[in-house]
Length: 372
Image (cartoon, helix red, strand yellow):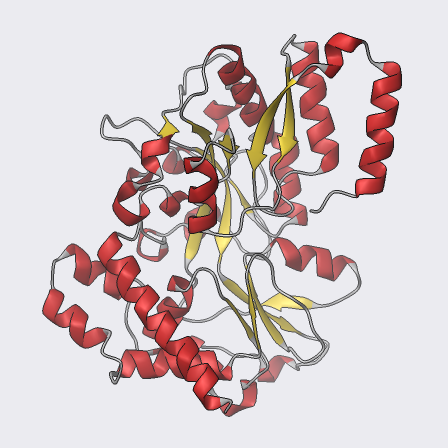
């Protein structure tokens, strides 16, 4: 969530008045995270813990918030951040370029006492390990690329039951899509054609170039399906969706939904019979952290995998907690059901990523052409 600069300024003034000079000389521990993942209250609490433990570091949020794989990689590569909340499959995308800038997690560190309570099935996923088999991530929380319908506008019998319904004239210009992570929309298009959402990735893994070329043919069935989906979309969003009056369905990672419903709205997850593509967001340490700064980073991470924060993301962000002792999100269900192997977004390689980007670029061109 964006910082209220006026309140931040007031807090800073009070700190300058009340704290000794030594407390004002703290070095920043720079956090790159998605909107809503770290609240100002939690930031104050974790900084108080760091202060009480004698660390001369203060956790601060980097702006703008995380927006996608390329933006996060740029911030990491240029040494502008210390701790990130990477989506797991970002780590090994595009020849594992991001992985090269991360350091392994010392899972036996005494400062990571909450690590033992994480869901065991999430701690050593292959796409988040280095060549030595060490994790480059700490599981934090996950969810789905879900579509939520405004039940104040749409009766129960009209709610879509299949991904394929998004192509119906009934929903033209009534739903939104994510713009920055096009692979989800390509996955939807594949699902609508009765394929795995990761079919292109599987072809790349098998080095089946002939079938891949056929699949991404600009005149082929998949491209036509993707382009039609883009043409039918009423809105595209980067980091978080808009809730405009023209939309009956919004796509979302989940955090925004609880916030909107708190305002008195009634957005409900559409349970597509084909299922949902799942993701896991993680906490990562950028290479170069060592000594006391690394210890401070571990203290920060430990706080955010503790039950208090994990309960919040389940209740307030419509997410699935990585903590094994936190109650399941009632709307999304059991974490073990959500994180099914065949629906977990894989670490796209360069071949797959380039193919999907080419398809998305073509779809955007087709949108512009349709509006002439």
